[in-house]
Image (cartoon, rainbow, N blue to C red):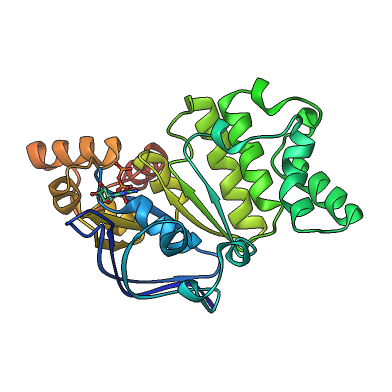
Length: 283
Ligand SMILES: Nc1ncnc2c1ncn2[C@@H]1O[C@H](COP(=O)(O)OP(=O)(O)OP(=O)(O)O)[C@@H](O)[C@H]1O
């Protein structure tokens, strides 16, 4: 397995801020992983995303120590336009990422700026509208779409640059449940079928528990837990100490177990499906 992202002892303090946003963070992400980042407000989640995409240090002022290596390149030494060929970044507000008259032009915009030949751009746009299930929206204005559709267009326009790594910073925080489900389904298929490495900051712990294969729990600029969703969300005490909730199913089973000792040696489930499976297995 090749490393997609490496943080070696990374600390970062924004200019005019006394408190470091990242404190000696070390991290290795292999190609093809789907990493979910959770943590309370101000714990450093967005800062990690900015550091992966090179916005830190290139577009933010502050003190960066340690080394960040993306696809073998030290981000400190490579311009953000160069890094954009490896890393695509999607933000919370889909509308703010859109600028063109039609969905087609929106997706073609990035590669056209890079001077990619028109035939290649055509091919990429057609592949992406199919992949993100937005074929019917090609000629529509991005500004007339639903939040979920807009976010999928934003993801498609980032993917048009063919990055190996997709970083999403709370991509569903402005979306309704339907839009959230659309974005998660799209990201899962990009990860599983296109083998794109995914790093996703998300408040929806239930969905991350189901979709990600690794969770980082951040608190006060540090990674306090790093493991499979099952390993992280079953560390209920540590998760709660940071002020976060564990998935609701896990919480209910834990309460029942503590009160009535009904769960035995089985691991606490993270999803309803898992709970039903574990209950059926023990019948
Ligand atoms: N542009 C900035 N300038 C100065 N300080 C910043 C900036 N962005 C973030 N910070 C500070 O860095 C720390 C970490 O912020 P960050 O946005 O990475 O946290 P977060 O976990 O993403 O929070 P949230 O969940 O609220 O978005 C916070 O103390 C925050 O105030």
